[in-house]
Length: 178
Image (cartoon, rainbow, N blue to C red; front, side):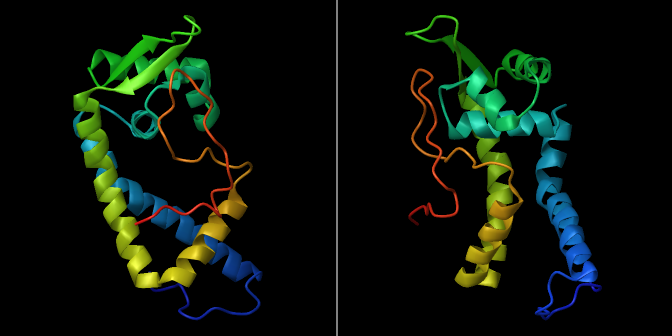
């Protein structure tokens, strides 16, 4: 994008610098989602389906209520998307063993394959940008994104078991080993 300045102005809270940051977020999200969107569109799915597939894949055995908390959407919206994914054979639902009212979600083999395909194109894009920016820029990027969040995110970690609550440490201080 030719309109974005290369150097950082120490007065980074100026109107123009803030607007450039907003524009970069819009354009980065557009490009980040484009390849996955095309894959999903070919299958008759959209971004809502992608989010469900991604988080069920990251947290096998996640309960519907935990997923609602992560996605911050209505039960009606999730029900529509989840019903479609179940009907297409990408997700299965099981009753909880401790609480039979609880619905626990898992990707099928087909769902896992789709999740890997969608995530891989995005993972490659993020890895390429991280390599180009360097470690200190990546840390700064995480701090900026963390500052945009209204609340802490559930930590991607061990699989949820029978609806066990997801851990919620600070995502900015948690690092994954390579």
